[in-house]
Image (tube, rainbow, N blue to C red; front, side):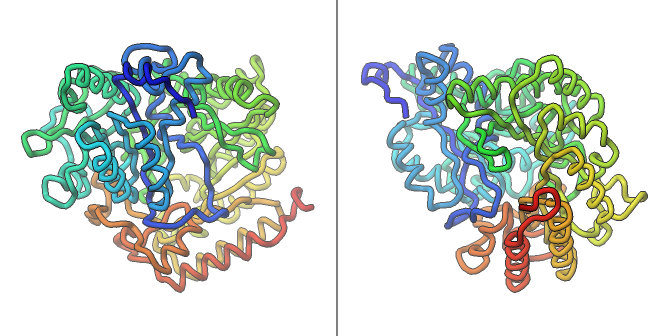
Length: 544
């Protein structure tokens, strides 16, 4: 941790802390669930602010995120952030607030994190009183207040979900602990929020007093929710396009602390091609579906951005971790959207400007099958790990999936088999996510795990297997009529919670409405079956 002199603290008018709120009421993530030490989404949202701090520019350049050199600035910014898993992390949050004494607290939250975000805000308010502006952001906020038509940017047209935080505060369902709620693109908005806090503090005003003066021309497609004389009010941006090529690297601004086992002990950065906030597909159960996240942006330059972020990861790891080599995972919902021309452009760049890095990303089964030459070329460029969403044994049983584009050519199982063949021939390791709670029969869940067990014996893949149980997200109103407000924890303490720590995402209270809550005995059987599969040695080319 970086320590400031008392003189520097006295001149520091902006002191910011950013946290990812916990999504569980208690407990720790099981080692078998996928995990990273880096708060990748939080770093992505705050990267413009962190870059201004590192450059010594403006309010952020004189904040607690600033330092004399880039490496120290990364350490300072990282020391002001926290990735939380459950309420067991509250002592660490409390210590961070006591240490940094922020006047700007940024809380990122998905829907299952809303109770945790409220708890964090309450704790900070108890410690700091009115000396802090508390801003809620993240995917939950963005899915609960939105513009139905982005060409009509009047606040009167906004769509509002039952889980919209300011609406819940106005209705008395949540305490009034947030000074603002930020929806949409956060990069430049967060930087502007910091400048507004600095200006307010210099004038001896409440830190949030000038939020309403933030310029709607601040780049990005964003909405800022504020209290308007006791009622929710919304400041809507003009939708000025961000220069995606000018966005800084999260690794360069916050550093790297993760090391994924699939990359052989290399330090692992999180990188982005910045093609959009979500996926190119529109699967109705997914929180990253294109209809909820706004589609793709600036595809033409995405390969160049990805190469640039990989290069930045290499530089950062060399500076911060001497003697350690670099790896990265691309957080695109689908690597470069799976577009052939973008993959070719990226590989051309790697041929001309090679990097000593191994990297991973996500592709769909059908993309792997229809682009074997591109997959092989990506492997030569450094792709050594692919993560795929298997979800189910039979897409037809759950009403279909948008990404199931090859359904007329072969069964889902046959295509899985062939995809593992393509990846294996290219020397690429593969892990997968399964998603239960979509309406499938319990027998189908066990059959899927059995099928994956056979693939692991024959192909050495998939490994790891990430379990998930479908959670209904707000999805800008496309939630199947669920209308959940997410005020309560998704799963209370008890036997369900103990089992759900084996899952990346799961909830007792917020299942898909047409499916209903999971049954305890079935969840327990799934966990036991998955443990048995994971406990058996891999075969295929990975056999020991």
